Length: 413
Image (cartoon, rainbow, N blue to C red):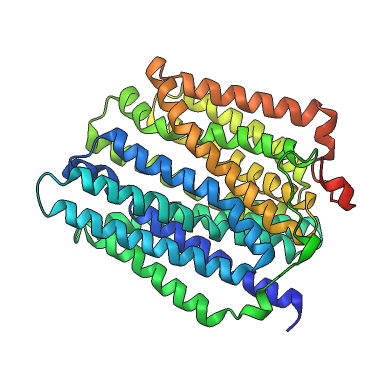
């Protein structure tokens, strides 16, 4: 089996791992708020569970990335999926214990932080890191790499469509059923990966000086990370969309859940189609993807800001998803082009950590701004897009986005 075939096969399993792990996470999305109420937890405590999970992902992504370059993708995938399965199983046990008696909220919350936040947050970070690293290392030209990288994003986006639908359907049978289905599918995934992937073919081990770490302050990587941070920060502030729909349309809790569900379903479908179908067919240079995607996202923020009906807000969300769906593959591929072959894992870790950081900051900033003025998060998102677009079109350094690493001396400050 040739290296290209082996890496391509590994990428297929990595894409499956991304889809399954993130779908397992999203299975629980419809349950978190009602479970928090039943357990006696506050909205702040629930938010803390999600924020700490994002923090664990941010911290572990570079660790997994360096591990890909040293111990190989198979070991990283198995370790990550195993941790994620353990975390979700512990989360299910903590919740079921908490529902079984009174005055257990404090211990249940502690258990949720340990399992759903720390263990699961650290484990789920591995799959996209491996996916991007293999997408980069299994391709030689930019068009093929962009196509492969976009599939990683599409797999993640598809989980945001399938997971909540499946979770809601399972919850009609029993609210505890999705809690135990989530870790179960991860156990199945772990077994499949352990059997199907052999250590030798997928490992890309490096030793000695080849383990050099690429810096996020690399003069070519830093602008890419900055643009990605700005785009994702605007997207992560959209946690306020539920409040926005409820307040503008004057809906009760059940009506809001249905309306937001429609908006996010359309958003997820557009995101998947953009990354999984449109980007591969376009074959655009990474800089062009960013230059077109960011302005479309800007239009999306504006439409949401002025939208007074569910259909107009949904159209704005769809435009935002289309713009981000174009920009994400451009951002991720551009970052991988900076790295040399043995640095692809490290770069994919930095890319994922950068995204995780925005989802630590964005929800807090977005909800804080919403309390000041409901339109404020949308205006800030639009301004961020304007800043990113201005840089992409006018800054001389932006023209180097998409340039490949040529010499070891060029890859460090």
